[in-house]
Amino acid sequence: MATEHVDVLIVGAGLSGIGAARHLQQECPNKSYAILEGRSAMGGTWDLFRYPGIRSDSDMYTLGYNFRPWTNKKAIADGSDIRQYVKDAAKEYGIDQQIRFNHLVKDSSWSSETSQWTVKAEHNGKSVTFTCNFLMMCSGYYRYDKGYTPDFPGLDQFKGQVVHPQHWPEDLDYNGKKVVVIGSGATAITLIPSMTDKAAHVTMLQRTPTYVLSIPGNDALANGMRKFLPEKLAYRLTRVKNVSLATFLYELSRRRPEFVKKIIRTQQRALLGKDFDIDKHFTPPYNPWDQRMCIVPNGDLYKALRKGKASIATDHIDTFTANGIKLKSGEVLEADIVITATGLDLVALGNTNMSVDGEKVVPANHFSYKGMMLSDVPNMVSVIGYTNASWTLKADLTSEYTCRLINHMDKNGFTYCAPRNTHGEEAAAPLLDLSSGYVQRSIDQFPKQGNEAPWKVYQNYALDLMKMRHSSVVDEFMEFGKSAKKSSKEKSRERLAS
Image (cartoon, rainbow, N blue to C red):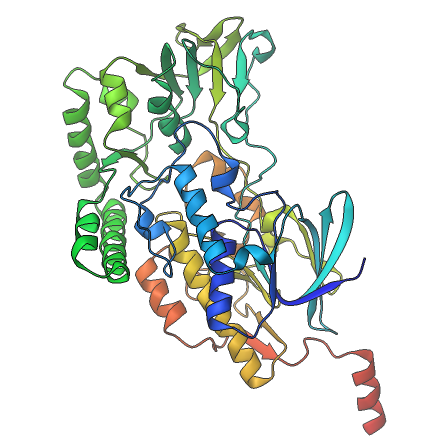
């Protein structure tokens, strides 16, 4: 099969990949591109996860693209609505015609002699090859083929059904069943109120509580502005408002954690009643935003708890039994179905093999440049969103910046750009500043960050907006050139000329 060449190759057809394609169309209209998607459908996370109640964990006015307004009345949207939003965007801009489905990228290698990437993908059991001048990795940072499940003692004794949310069975019947959801993150907190309509009872089993904040499911101000203002203007104003509020809450959490704890506790007491044990079940041993804060629309989790349709057990698992789970305290949770909402397995660079001039790229040996490129890896961008705000805010900025880089290279006749870390290993720190278990299990596989720009990842949209949209792409760390390494023919010509 012949090798296909495009100017820019995008890996992943989720929120990030479709957004990257649109930015390329707008800002680099003369560039050809293709999207390689390992699965048979677009949507990424929002197509993979199909468990009950799957929804955004941030508002859609900031999770939506900056180029396409979110017009649904729901601020916290269902997974199916987000999936349709991505599909509609791809269709509207003709991006869906550039997607190669069932193309799982296995290997990417850069050649300095040709200033090109050679990308090998598996398609219908066969290897296919693409070449490109610029590579955009938009596949996120967790494994799609499996989630994380601990080795639970006695699991083989359990006679019921065990389900991981990442691979939810379409025919799962939980009507009238006793369900235990293991976990306390966004997935568990979403599942519990969504399953109480059919299940006999749903119990959330957690080792450690999570900070949970209730917000309105609809943004009244956003919906009101749409009635009186042009759609795009209303969308932009809502984005500014919501970004500002989210940034304020995050900064307040870091600087005055006790005050934020008090705010959250006051809300929980009002929604759960005076007799609920908030200290045990909703008071984590860490500060707000040391781990990602969970959002519940209209207090749906609290409503399920107050009505007695759901409950929380904060304890450690001693062992599974034939009919449920025995806890360290001696309490036994009876269960027909156990859902292991125990987290994700993180992977860097889409879990693909990558090399530069034959040398394997080990992400942990590199520094992250502006949270989007790896030191000493030419013409490659990894689109990673925020951990403390909507993913797409950073993804949009990264795609815009990539287009500026490409246009600068074209204007000056450069064939490559590569960040060079000339400051060494001083003050190296993990890329993601979260204490969550799913992060800590895998963070040593990811690039490092430094203590100052452009090697520090600030997780601050306002700051990134200035640094990535309005500043020059030229700095002392970014190397531009016409050949990263001279070819043998060029060396021969130089020897003859001398």
